[in-house]
Length: 255
Image 1 (cartoon, helix red, strand yellow):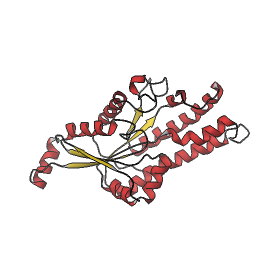
Image 2 (image 1 turned 180 degrees about the vertical axis):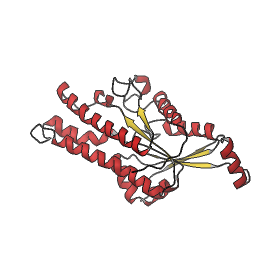
Image 3 (image 1 turned 180 degrees about the horizontal axis):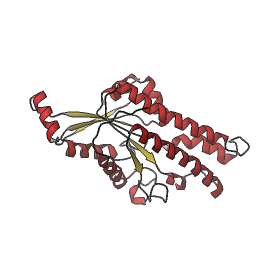
Image 4 (image 1 turned 120 degrees about the vertical axis):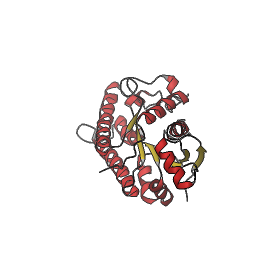
């Protein structure tokens, strides 16, 4: 079954060089960029980022942007759909713009086991080691598959990474300060890996949110919706501005 996709188009301007190319090749017709959105927290259901970023692209690049949002997918689900969902595979192969967030949900099961005392290992942290290893593998496999589908064709690819502030979320599992410190340490190990891997591949990363609201302290509530975890319009705008500030150089994720 084809997953739900929400399509909407917006309008804008083109840089001089691209405008000349578009006009000469299509009799003056406006160029349209397809924008594919995947993940949990970047979708319009949980943020305002897709339309805000599309608006910036249109203003800065003078193109129309058609935004295609896919279902709510955690990292392992993004990976599975990149492997098996032919609609998604074709869309990623042809898109000009691709964004997704590597949501922190990969921590859910290891965290629950750890807090309950069922993690395993002499230090009670085996499930956290396994969770980190799997997250690293999923991160790498997602970018490898995108590169494979692009087949050498560059795209405006950007990835969102969360800070560890979600461990202070009011609905987070009850845990001791010592347990929280252990979990934060494992999550920060993933952050280091992801940032280094993205840098090596030439894939720009944006943060939710820039310090001091990444790992240092909880974001202002103005950045969040009433549930205090998903992005408000103001918080979304900060992320969209970061996306804008990465520029418009198309990249091909290396391995």
